[in-house]
Structures are given as C-alpha cells and as structure tokens.
Length: 152
Image (cartoon, rainbow, N blue to C red; front, side, top):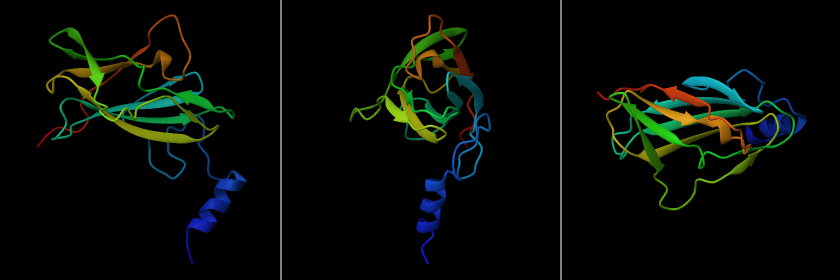
C-alpha cells in the first residue's frame, strides 16, 4: 500500500500544517540556524559550507503563521558578509533566474538554499529580512548567521 494516499488525506484534512512559532517542518525536523519572525513568517537562517560553491550558501527555512497566503521573496533581501569589521554586499548566484517571489499557503512551510557570490572567509553573513514577506518596511532588520558547518 502506498504511503502517498494517507499522506494526501492528512494534508487535505489539515492535520499536516505548520504550527506557528514551532520553527519545525510539518513533516518533522527543526529549522536549522538563527530564528526570527517578520510579518506572518517564522524564518530561520543558517550559513552552510559547500565545497563547490563560489561563496557562502544560506539555508532559509520558513513557516507561514497566518491562515492566508504570504509572499516569500528571498531574491530582494539584501545580503552582506561581515569580515574584518566591514560589510560587503553579496549577489545571488542564479544563472537560470530561478529565485523569485512566490506565495506560501497559510500554515505551510518551505525551505531553500541560495548561493551567493562573495568571499568564502568571513565572520558571519547577514540578511535584511525586512522585505522577505513582500512588505516594504521603513527600517532594515538584519539577522546574522555564523558558519554552521565548518570545512574538514
């Protein structure tokens, strides 16, 4: 018997959904990294070391606390690397232009990893989350994540 049918039935009845403030995927597993919230989004940022990446990779995990859909726009979030006491802006590595704003259904969660072009040695990487949910807030809201998995 396939596990897909019972899983779809649970999803349809609302038994599988994001629990606001839990920072956990509906299918299990905690959101890794630094936790924060903006608008309807619970958000976690983790910086990962990827041997073949040009620069830092940020793992974004997010859950919609609200019952209505919310926009998740990772492409417009300014990202900087902090090293030697200075900030250096980073650009997304997106040759196929896949990173764009998309809706996230109410009480649902998602996960993305995005590579940035920049230095591989740094103190931390910081993201201005003030626009990630599609809202235009007057002040930036920086969240910084240290490197979580160190190269061997």
